[in-house]
Amino acid sequence: MATTTAAQKKAEAKVQYDAFLAACPSQQLLARVSGKWVTLVLSALGSGPDCDGEPRPMRYSELARTLAGVSPKMLSQTLRSLERDGLVSRVATATVPVTVTYQLTALGLSLHRTVRQLKTWSEQHRDEVAAHQQAFDATR
Image (cartoon, rainbow, N blue to C red; front, top):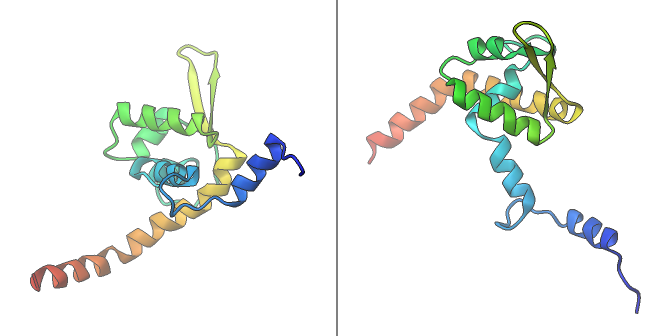
């Protein structure tokens, strides 16, 4: 009987990730990255409100202006969680006052295009969805 190393067990479990299963770690990650502010921060980070530019570092205040309606507390929490997940890096420069910029990591860049497309899709189809909602509600 062959023994299985911990690394082999981990690799086998990774192949078996299935986000449709409640206990799957990928489901937890999907829930985290699909949150409203996470999606908007990732899509805006460096490419601005129109999402037509290339990703670049942005200061906290620039992000706050871009994301109308986000509270300072929510923006800070979102950026902290994205940094913890390895999607965003925070760079503090010793100036008076301290200059802090945020930028997408390689992992964040791999998700950036997807969330930008989701934002664009929601803007393009909002009226159509609203019409379907009205029609549905009228039949109830």
